[in-house]
Image 1 (tube, rainbow, N blue to C red):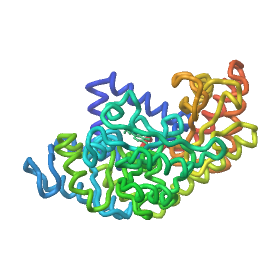
Image 2 (cartoon, rainbow, N blue to C red):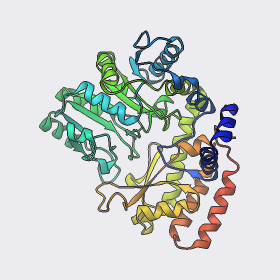
Image 3 (cartoon, rainbow, N blue to C red):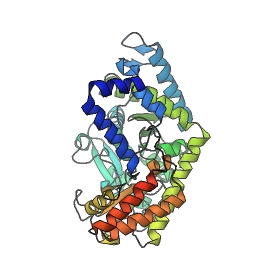
Image 4 (tube, rainbow, N blue to C red):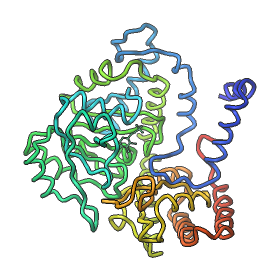
Length: 419
Ligand SMILES: *Cc1c(COP(=O)(O)O)cnc(C)c1O
């Protein structure tokens, strides 16, 4: 690795300087974007390895190019580890991203025009769950279910009525901005009644399922689970489709040759490493700590009279209603926290009256801070800084003072993968 970086420094100082700048940025502040994380040094090594040179179209043992001795080894390792970690019958580790993995499932198991019942986007669903601006939203007929206003629970009577009316071919659960766990058994019961395929998009919480800290949809008979590999799993950017056996053939064909060409074998190697880590007790402890920290942060914010969507969290995500809490829209709140080296993202809240670029809240999560070793006590300090900043967004001297405190605090926490 060192010789690679030395070559970069010598031969492309512009890119090298940007890389060093990004390393410094990632160390300097507290990363609270819930979809981000710090990956392992081993993953960075695999991503920058010679596996990036190799074409491996096809699957282990059935490739369209020669020279696959070592690529077959790593893809088999990644698939076997995925099956073990997620307790499932089949794993496809080739999707190039979370978006591609979901497209591969829809296109492989359904016909264009088929109906998919999925979570409303302002209630926490993802762009790839049929947002009108997405290609999938045009190809398939997405029907929405919503979450309740008080504790964010899903109204399964309403969901069942909608399923009976629309006869979806697939019922999809999973989210990008929803702070509660999912009642998989209740989804499965409705799906069985209407003969729908059950899919969970666990992109956000895949690592928490892998670490046995949250419920596993396969324990409740789900057919398909997708997850990104770079969020709570702490791996390289990528996606996986996990499934029961009867769906394996269709899914593999849909990923390749249906949707993609050559897999990124450097990422597949890194996914194998990530899943090896996920099999350890220290990863399971990490997953539990992510949840403990989220609860601690939620309680500290609630104690300071902040308003959280659904009133709390069961997972790694908190959605803060910044209009209600501080009279600030989400953009101003994000900018204010940026000024004190705390990184969050503006977020629409359920039935948000405001537009996505100036929404009513921010989204906060604990996977990255936990990967740095921050604890529940640290979450309490963090909440104090956040509230002090958000109460005085135009007080430059107060923000500068908090920023200095946050930066000094961060120096105690080394960042995995950065010297
Ligand atoms: C992040 C995410 C995706 C998409 O992942 P990309 O790798 O960004 O394409 C899909 N679904 C959900 C629920 C996500 O949170």
